[in-house]
Image 1: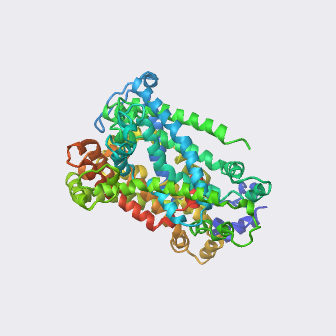
Image 2: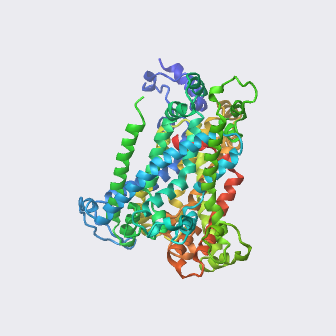
Image 3: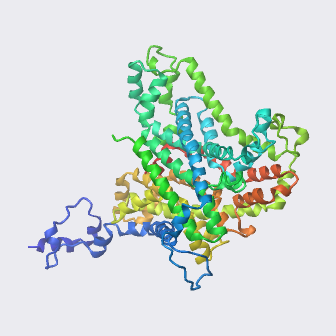
Length: 333
Length: 307
């Protein structure tokens, strides 16, 4: 019964691997004992182009070594009183259960840093969404100087934080240009050494620095809003402002969800700005971010297990916020 | 391609808006004069807000005495000097910082381009088991927050493998940019299948096919990926800061940051020297970006992030 197929398979073994269009043999023949048609073993395991597996292998190894394994390691570490030891040394690191997590919720420094990043997100995220959508829409409609405007909006995004932090320190120092312009209105103590103003200035800095990237995302999304919608809105008598809210805003909703998610994730990662702009989270920890506390606890003071627990709690909070954003901004359509 | 359209100013889309001909057509979608002026004002204010700090960076780096008055924002021949560049170079070795940044960035670029092209090609063109899972992983990896990996990566790379103060240790966590993998995949998907089939019938192996047929067709993707990947490690601060304690191994971003946080107060004109270092750190990226800006395009990168 299977002779003909066996012949077929045997007569052109080299074609089996790339017979894209050829009809595949039915399941019944594959299991037949008389040497019926079978894909060679390597094809059954790896698929029709085993080379694909080989080509992707370096990337897969990278993902496992740099993402998957450290992720598991972070969770493991957070349940232990983990400490640094010389490589290869046998040390006993005691299992402490949820102690690290309990400490996260009672440590005033950690709680303050979570509050700080909350202030940061409340200022940074809405400002980012509104400004990048408005600027992207304006940029999308403009005819002249388009390339120049695009470049000027992206430049802060492509420049190192460390470099632009230097200028902001200069601008916002107590005798800096901003205070010179404000004159008697300048705040005391000055911006970056003021407990109330330090975090908002950092939030403004990050908004300014990252805005170009979100403008880029919105520009891509605006290309997908059908032109006919604007025309029919105009026919119905909608003005420019009205059609912005009724056509543009709903039209770019997927991009808005993405911008919300990315700006929240990037905001929760805040480290460089408080470390440099306010000299390590000052004044009195008013601008310390959770990642800064993780650095201090995990690496400076040698409690990586505790720092890993802070990181996991932070990520859980970010996931909750992202879920809520998706729920309320994403719509269910 | 949409990418080219966007970069080229989309003449066909913008032509009706200037609308000199046919005043009755599409009056509703046109802006009134006042609205157009308002849009111009918003865009111009935006451009000034984005560009002024860079202008001020250059001006400040050239001042003998830091002049924070409003007049100081304009170049004053009596107050111009190159001394700050000499001062910062005597504190942090600018050349070795640039070389370290270059090696760090170059290593990441090399790994990303070589392994990213291979992975992108296999995800787009080849049929193999696990392809869907690998693609899903590439998307997922982009939303894993770095703060979660920070501590375990430090323990593994700096402590267990002893790769602190080592280029390999710096490069490893960034070695293959997942966004690049997805951008490459996106471009390879656009290459017509028939081209590959024809070359296979002619007996070309997959590697040869990739090198001779596919790669030349996706050259724009190569430039986009190089640009996008370049800004990551060149600007990265946290990771190299954790892993390099030896000044001779530090990338420029790290040594400049250490200068800002530690030694700036002990210098005659700390702002001038800091800004001079900032100009040196910012210049390569900004120049590269301005030259190749038309490759830094919404649609490519948008698809890379969204998948």
